[in-house]
Amino acid sequence: MFLERSGAGSPPLVFIHGFTCSHEDWEAQRRALEATHEVIACDLPGHGRTPARLEDASIEHFGREVAQLLSTPSILIGHSMGCRVALQAAALRPDAVAGLVLVDGSRVGVGDPAQAQAAVRAQIEAKGFGAFNEAFFAGMVFRPLPGADALLARAKRMPEDFGTALFL
Image (cartoon, one colour):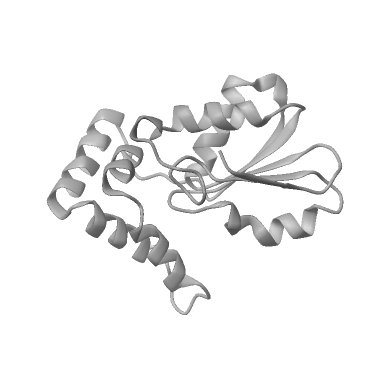
């Protein structure tokens, strides 16, 4: 898993991005905090500079990957899907987590998990993953937003099989 590590100081801050995002989305926070803390920003499998393998497309796998990064009690900072990854890593390694910061945690389905998953699967199958993903992100981006076009272009590059498996 690709990561950038900078700064020094405890506790380490581990930044975990959201769906179709990358470590680069945390650049401003990294620069602001590296003077007082060790800062780690990773690219989850299938995102940024970390290659995708279909068998890695799960929050459980992502949580294991992040948990393996933790050598000392750290503060995990997750955004959107990264919130679920941070919670999974904390469940696996509670001794290595000094705190959690959950930013704009995503909630796509409500109610019964199996029914929610079936409903999203039906939407993806009806539209195709590319159109589903484009509409999903376009609905979150208000214009004018600096970098909106780059964000939407990056979301469109998510491989269909990996993105579908992970989204579900």
